[in-house]
Length: 383
Ligand code: DP6
Figure 1 (tube, rainbow, N blue to C red):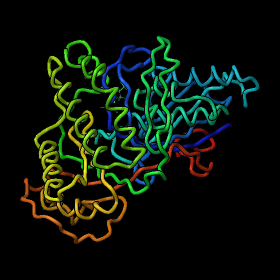
Figure 2: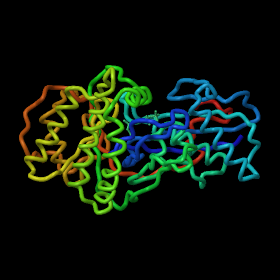
Figure 3: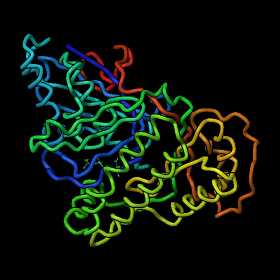
């Protein structure tokens, strides 16, 4: 049996990917740019095994058995990896061996926290390592699993260029700066208490391309300049410019979603209160200390530098108090220094509007793990 286990990170976009020009190849209508989060707090983990004893390709996804070949996106990723392995010659094992794959997220998928990006990035990287093609260009394969997954194959800040070729050969992601270049960059993920099922990104963006008149203006006239400006802000570690562009782009993405017919509404009242909190915090501080961004759901992702974490968390505890704190840890992840530091007074928006907060930071790309950390046993079944 041949086996490989890897982990891959979550990434959160600061310039959003929204809209495809090719649904099949997953080619976007605009460039996007994201920050990779540390795998210490959140990651996907995948084990893939190949054996002549396996009868069919099987996958266990977060404990549930799924028919691998019936998911066209995963099937395509495997096909592409095998194509590269075959083109390179001398594969490590016969390419017709069937696979058992087990994949898990160490954070709740239901929380809508970019799980497909980490999941597909991890699948593609693990398969690439298994077949010995990990040094090849993999972002165009991960992109065909889930668009945003191509940005999880590297650490730090990552730019996915939309490309122009109809076959997608130039729709690739590359690193803008390494995680060590802005190592004090931190993230607070605010998980909003919400059970409402949202329109998936795939469906939402398809409807948006079909019905919104604003989306093309964004793709053609706004994003190119924003990519240039935010790249400059990131390279010079200019937090003020970075934060302003990030917040404006999140707002514009949700405006476009609202311009879809029927409208896609992802942010809720709590999300809007969080945005308001951030603007108020920056106003009281007299400078931009923190930025928000929201994906296709109500949860917020706040970007800030390490020295401002204690102050912002203290403010959040006043504005969004949580009386569960005794049972569930309200702030999970990296421990916060100077916990009691309360810079400003905030009025409460109400109790328990947030489920919990995850404190994490900028991080590295995917990694291989030791065999003993695998999710499958010697028989190729989940442990
Ligand atoms: C709002 O990558 O999940 O998070 O390519 O259809 O799988 P598919 O969509 P997906 O969309 C992510 C949208 C977003 C913005 C972003 O991450 O850039």
